[in-house]
Structure formats: structure tokens, C-alpha cells
Amino acid sequence: MRGLPMSSNATSPLSSAAASVSDATGRKGDKLSDALHTKDPTPRTMSREARRAQLIASTIETLAARGYSRITLTDVARTAGLSHGLVLFHFESKEKLLAETLAFLAEEYRQNWQEALSCVGDDPAEQLNALIEADFNPAICTPSRLAAWCSFWGEAQSRPIYQELCGDKDDAYNQQLEEICQRLIDAGGYGHNARHVARVIRVTSEGTWLDLMTIAAPYSPEEALATVRTCAALCFPQHFTPAGLRGDRPTGG
View 1 (tube, one colour):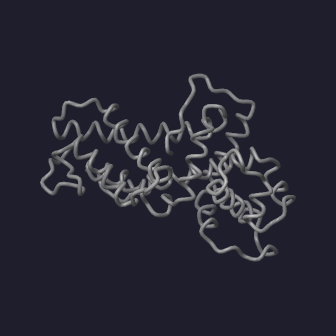
View 2 (tube, rainbow, N blue to C red):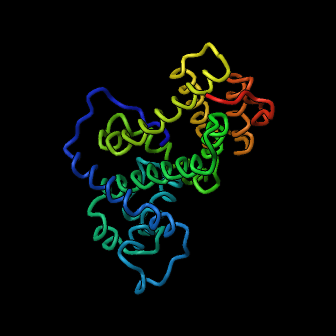
View 3 (cartoon, rainbow, N blue to C red):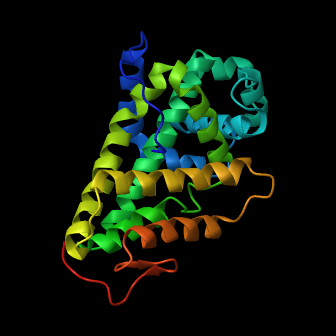
């Protein structure tokens, strides 16, 4: 996930709800993602799972349009073309709807980078390149998703449930990135600290996401990708150029 800020002792009365949301999203992530990219069937033929997916998709769109502080269940219902009562039937409250929306985004992000890694071999340079490119996959790097992530980032410190929903996924990503960087350091004889380099690459990628949403004249996702590749080239010049992987890079690691 995109690194929600963590407090040192985050606890929440909604801990059990966070766990159930995360588990449910993990089990149904593929179906939910498919539903989010499927045209809306007629209300009478839509399953409960598909209806909830529709409402999560509408929540993402509504967050992008109105922001976290202004979003209401009525707004989400209007975006979905449904009644306020139907939204309440499926999610009970705005807080639960938003928590499940974040759980979906976090699981979607996890599946995206893990799938990218599964498509390359053991070469750490190819693995790092896959992780970098995964962040700009058009399926997840959309204006509405970026806006939704920005909304949740702004609320994370005051809402421990959001940290709980994403903490394990964040840790898994950070550990994977750090391990890849360590193998590159070993292969190239770089004098870097793997944790620091992994953090630099991660926050550079996150920073481009923020730029894409907040600056007056945002650059393209392709330019954002080139920016992160430039960061990789500065950290690992034997393995990367700003255009991508070097053909004459060292192997091993």
C-alpha cells in the first residue's frame, strides 16, 4: 500500500472490525476488483457481493469529487444511482463503508505488486523495476484512486483503524523492497544502507502520486515513472539508467 503513517501505539475499538474487513477483502479481492471494472447490471440481478463492490467503486469516485470531510452516504448513493437506505443496508455507517473502501484499495495494491513480481525472475534489478512499474499500472494509478488514497492519508493519524487495516500489507511491501535493495547492493558493491535506499525509492514513488493529484499542472504517469526510475539510477547506477534497466548490469545478488 501507499504507506499510511503509523502511530507508535495505535489501538482502536474497531480493531475486530478492521480484521474482518481485511480478511474479507483478502478472500474476495479478485472478484471485487472485477466487479469494480464491470458495467453496472440491473439492480434485480446484482448479487450482494457485486452490489457492495459497486458501492465501494462509487465511494472511490465520490471521495475524488468531494473529499473525505464532505463525503456523505447520500453522496455515495447518488453516485451509484441507489437509495440512501440501500447503502445503509450493506454498510451500516459511513465509517464502515470508508473502512471497507480502504481495505479494498490496500488489497488491490498488494495484489498488483505481488503479481508484478511473479512475472519476473530472480534478478533483483528486474524485481525492483517490476515494483516501480507496478505503481503506475493504469489499473490502479487512476485519478479517482489517487484522490481516494490522498483522502485516507490525511485521516490516518486520527483514525487508528486505517493504520490497522494497512499495517501488515505496508510491512510486507517494505520488507520485500528492502530485501531487493540489499541484493542489488551486494551485486554491485554499493556502499548503501538497504533500508534507507528502499525508503528513498518508496517515498519518491509516493511523492509522484501526490504530485499527480495536487500540483496545478501535473505531469503524466509516464513522467512520474521516469522520475522514480531516475531515483533508482542514482541509487544503483550499474543496474539502472533513467530510461530503465541497463543491459550490461551486473548479475547475481
